[in-house]
Amino acid sequence: MSTPLTDRRTLIKDLLILTGRSASSLATEIGINRSGVTHWLKHGGTSIGIEKQDEILSRLGVVGGTLSPDIVHVWNLKIGELLPLARVLSWAGGRPYKIFYLYTSSPKKLDHYFDHRNWSSTHHPLLIHSSFPPINIVFRHRPPTFLPVTQIQLIDPVLVDTGLAEWVNIFIEDYPEKDKYFFKIVDKLLYDEFLKEEIPLEKFDQVWNSVSVENGAISTIGKSDETPRTWEELVKQAQANGISLQEASEKLLGREKGGN
Image 1 (spheres, helix red, strand yellow):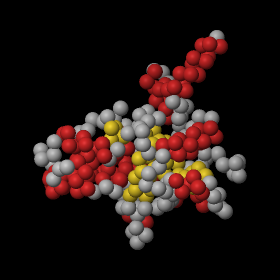
Image 2 (spheres, rainbow, N blue to C red):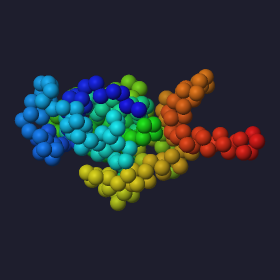
Image 3 (cartoon, rainbow, N blue to C red):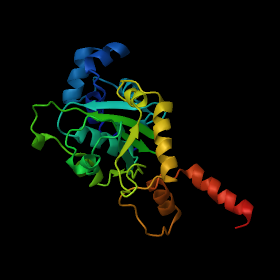
Image 4 (cartoon, rainbow, N blue to C red):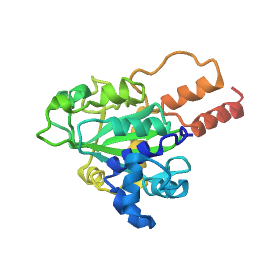
């Protein structure tokens, strides 16, 4: 469950940036005054009621107080900072999110890509996933080429080091001596699907489930080895390792049936 909508204006402004939508076009769609929406976003007040705010949020992918689980949220950032992304992810409550880049065709020297901390402005799609609540995001960071690298925020300090997200470990058959990768290699046809502005949920699931199969259960960098002491800790640890509640339940039921 997401955190309360305590600051709707900030959330809407961040989602407008991420989705590339304009406040005026949304106002036209839902039949309210465009200048009124712009004024409300800048200064607040009561000119836009809760009902209309909810309608704006629904058109930005928010359903039932969180990000809709029924679509792939396709977000792009053309600025250097990742704060709009971090704020929305933090609000949606899927911590820790699992993340990895999507890549096509094995590069000649994979070693150049092993250290994700060196990827300051990669244009490859970043897949972001939460099992609970179920959230699927394809994020592309495309800051202007003339923007100094020092003004482009990296994924790790903003998302990973803060505990908001974790890189997924992916096994690559051609490099069995290395066991931690942060990108999944797919064929070009599938990769191109993730460059579009609308991505079918089944395509996202296809890639994500293939990673799950490779890992058995998705393993992540920095996972905890501590034994859970409460049901809440157990649930959190299962989610942190990419195990859904349904999978855990099926395993428990299977053990009971087998008498173990």
